[in-house]
Length: 443
Image (cartoon, rainbow, N blue to C red):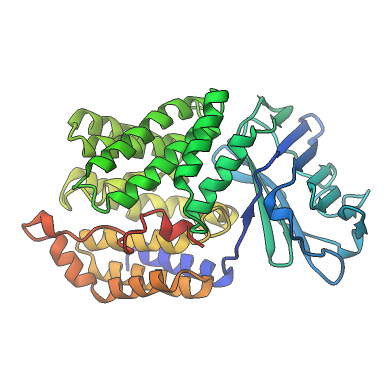
């Protein structure tokens, strides 16, 4: 039995134990300050979100309702901070503008106050109880839940990011609305790609140091590229435009978010993938080589997350090529060595982050990779596991059906990948023209 089978079984157990649930990302007028005193291992967190559209309707957090919170940060490529904790429901009261949580003792994760109403969400936490956010960090992630309603807030742009203070100033309105439109599109809630790009371009034009807006613009162009280019070996003019625009945005974004040592190392991984795809699209072997080198460096920087980036070569590289040998090495040898960290990084490995079906999509991709390698049994297991996990987590019925079909036809797919005619190779993660992003990010 190969190690990947054990990996798949462990992943499936994690999926069945923790079904995915929906979330809403808050973006409007968000700002945060995190202070820490390294000598005392203490700190303070002050978080605010403005009149975001998602707060127009609220759930009552008072007893017998259940509310939960987690403040974490992406530090040295891992999520750190307090675990998600339940807030005592008796600490909530109804106020004139919404609901107020007060606990001077900070018994739950150091949370002292929360104000939750139509006009916004504010959170204050302090030690003891609160695990300080200590910079430099890649980003800060706040998760606040009332019943089944979950709110996420992400902070990526910082005016200060050091061991004593992490400060994220309020983004422009264009940046906030552009981010909201980006996630509406990626989650499959509404098709707002063009609107998102217009707003993100407006935000980065007004503030050239807004790395987050530039990064999201690069990702949106990459998303649109995947829609119009289901098979990267055959790239249309529209596809070339999208991948070129993606690399231009990433080239500006990455230095603002990741300097090779400090920041969000994931940014370099996505940029490397875009560079590689651009090289393939334009038939430029030098750009292809540059992209491969960048993907390898990104994987060295962050094996747990960026280890997935070289899989972008899967649809193009021949099964007996050195590039494909690298892919199989990652699957068979590298991933098992880092998988043990997934238990404390469910946002990366499972469905607890901004990809509500990350697990199912990953297993679908693994199935294609195994099929192209001629490892039919591994492919069947991976496709079937994706379908089983998806049935538990509320994955799209169409995606579940497709995963079942792929499992049933794994042998036929493997034969097509390995015959003498590369033109008949089935497209990877072929889910019916919705693009590769959909299988992980669509609700």
